[in-house]
Amino acid sequence: MHLSPDQIVFWHYGFLKLNATIVFTWGLMLMMAGGSKLITRNLSIGIQRSRWQNLLEIVVTGIEKQIAEVGLSRPEKYLGFLGTLFLFVAAAAVCTVIPGYEPPTASLSTTAALALCVFVAVPFFGVEEQGVRNYLKSYAKPTIIMLPFNIISELSRTLALAVRLFGNMMSGAMIIGILLTITPFIFPIIMTVLGLLTGMVQAYIFSILATVYIAAATRDRKPKPESVQAIPA
Amino acid sequence: MDNMTIIAVASIVIAGITISLGSIGPALAEGRAVATALTSLAQQPDASATITRTLFVGLAMIESIAIYCFVVSMILIFANPFWNHVIAQTAGK
Image (cartoon, rainbow over all chains, first blue to last red; front, side, top):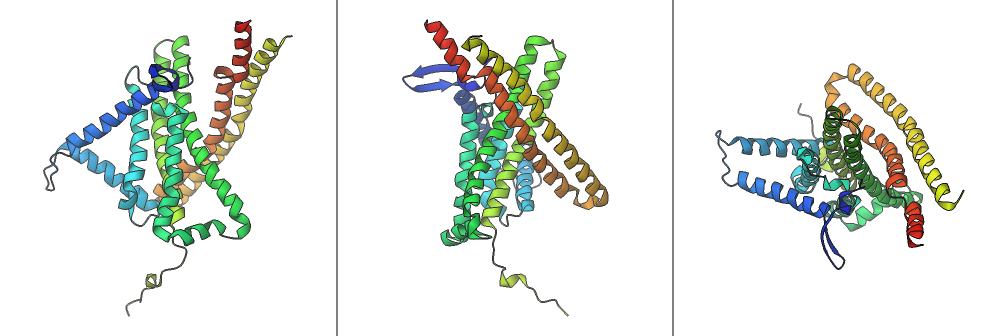
């Protein structure tokens, strides 16, 4: 009974280890990148389009709408990063239906890496939008006394992102593993379905939280003069 | 009782207590959150997308607390460093 796919090692040389987490991550990357490449080979603009292109368009416009709803004014700038977060975590959860597969997000290494990406991306987008001085000044809002608390909240948000995703994925895999040794067929299948549901919800939560953090970092503090519009008489 | 027995008993008992006490608070809080969300959905059905999204985000944050307790419990049972240390000592003897 292993705690995470890190403990299944396929090959090692010195301190380099090829464990199940890495292999499954590579498999996911291959499937998602290869599939998208195949689908977007002949994109069509007109009414007639293949159903796979339709599917991808639904997914991309859905994510773009969600990002715009949270409050980011130009969603296409952030679509690459946030869309990839959602699609990777969702694909990692959905592929649980394949026998012998374990989600790589059930390992703390993967979730910590994803949370660190968000931790780096938030100041990056904040500085890109507001400039270095304004972004650093935002840490001292509302008063300078809040400065250590703002810094601590940045770190604890990252930790919470990593542990939340890890805990949800690991508990799903572990409960199925334990139940398979106890009860026959039907109950582990029900728990697998529940695991799929929580996996999709956690993917959505991870990307929405990343969106909210980026929106908080890039929010314009000063009111824009052109937002006051003359009302036509 | 020698060291091994004390560590085993403590780990098992505390693992059970951790997860049972740690799920009381989040369960109550999630119930209240969903109840309030249903009330506001009934009052303003037009805002259902925003309310639903905020509800899910809030539920995930509340759930994290229960997940932390679950992770501690799993570590005590499956990846217990004190137990591994004591086992390594007995195996080495």
